[in-house]
Amino acid sequence: MSLLHLSSLADVSAAAWDALLPDDQPFLRHAFLLTLEESGSVRPESGWQPDHLIWREQGEIRAALPGYRKRNSWGEYVFDHAWADACQRAGIPYYPKWLGAIPFSPVTGARLLGDAASLIAQLPDYLHQHGLSSAHINFTTPHANGLLAQAEDWLPRLGIQYHWHNRGYRDFQDFLDTLMSRKRKQLRKEREQVASSGFAFEWYRGDQLREDQWDFVYTCYANTYAVRGQRPYLTRDFFSLLAERMPHSIRVCIASLQGQQAAMAFCLVDNNTLYGRYWGCLAEFDRLHFETCFYQGMDFAIAEGLQRFDAGAQGEHKLVRGFEPQLTHSWHYLSHPGLRDAVDDFLQQERAGMRAWAVEARESLPYRRGD
Image 1: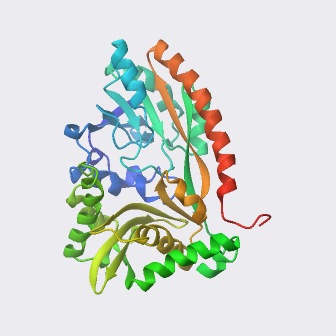
Image 2: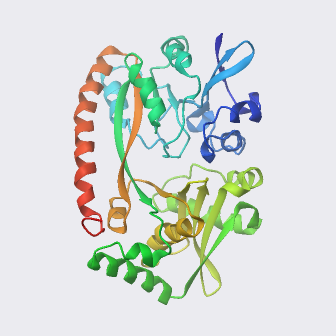
Image 3: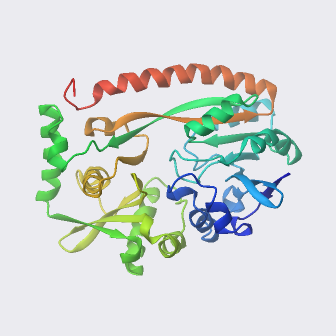
């Protein structure tokens, strides 16, 4: 029995890795994670050093945990910058740390693959042996939450996102009929405003886009970072490589105005859920973001019979459009006892606030009361 770490997912076969996956969510597939590495989107120079953990017994992989050694906290969507700043002021090294997560993807899903209890038990020793201050596992499922709650010294953290649920709607109008009159008029007006401007929308699978269209997708994606003075996390190669390896998991909505491409929303899909990942436009148009990122995705989910639309992290503006508050979970193991105690106190207060907000936020939902 042994705990091994891999500096690249290329060191394990796709068949062995994917055999551990409990469902068809695309983010954990060998092809997705390897594409992040081989496209240069995750690399040590950017603070993301692949460090995947596997538990092997009798020559076979029994458990795995995708992970990375981190020298910053960018791209994680569970924000611990304040913890790192406090450590710096106190002279306590916070980086490098170890992160179990899907890079740049705040999507709840399986993290502890296979029979992972033994792997979790070995993590504290692994941190000590490799000079890592802490371990963090983000956006965990109930299965992982149960295992980590039983493990010693792991601290739970709550976050909140907003997801739209398809309750068997026949079409978008069927959804609108469940809303209060004033909210129904607001959503209809937003859609009519974009339609009257002349925008047309078309959905594509990954294998239906030409390379020049992928150029457009990347330009839009990169522009969302450029307007904030930031560099994009993903490289141009990521999109083409993923389209080759997982074309049927990709959906892209392209908005055109008078025959010219103007905006896009890049999504992934599984049997139950549409995951809105990246958005971008070449110029600002009123209400185009809402149409491209939300309403088009809701239309798609209804047409395809998908149960849920996860349109990404944060965004209280989603509430009035029918996206419901959803608590997310992460877990944190901090080796320094003083830091662990301070963070534990903070997280207890934060969890109470998150639970209260999840209840309060439901008051902003547009649905008719009693529905």
